[in-house]
Structures are given as C-alpha cells and as structure tokens.
Length: 131
Image: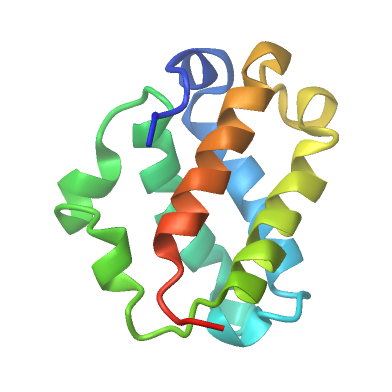
C-alpha cells in the first residue's frame, strides 16, 4: 500500500487535514454505518484521533504514534464487522467529501487521485468479515 504524497500535508497542514477528516466523519455519522462510530457528541473527538493518523500518512509529524503508539489499524478495528459493503460506504463518504476538497479544504488537486487510491487499498485491507 503506497502512502499518500507528503505534498498533501505541506499544502493543507494539520488543521486542513483535521477539518477534512471532521467533514468525512460528519458524513459517516449520517451513513448506514453510523453505528460503527461514536454517537454524535463524541464523533468530533473520534475524527480528531483519526486525523492524527492521516496527518502522519500525508507527510506530517507522527502525532498518532506519539499519542497512541503504533497505529495497528487492522488490529484496532477487529471488534467491528468491516464488510465489503461497509468499506464501500466508508470510501463513499470520503469520495463525496473529496469532490469539493480542493475548493473547500485546499486539498492539492494533483494529489487527489493518489489519495483516493490509498483510501481504496487501505479500506480493502481493513475488511475483516466475509460477505
């Protein structure tokens, strides 16, 4: 799995990535997989934790590792039934937000395709339940 281009972090910074992830989590909180995420009052905190992971993989400092240790995302998500259908909803929420990410979040247009590729491969790796 190829990591996203570090130019993402260089362009939008920590705050930009945090705002993008919060927007995606707002979509997830309204999606058919909302039950896999914390309730509305805790959703922003979960988004902020996830943003630390995305900051690191997009070329920023390893804030997630500094605060929580090794990401071990697949292990950390074993308690959730991540099916192909759930994966598609998750990726769909990301893709919906990325549609306007250049204008809304200042996301570098030249890195959209590779970031989407990363989300696809990462999410396929996270599937832990057969159909």
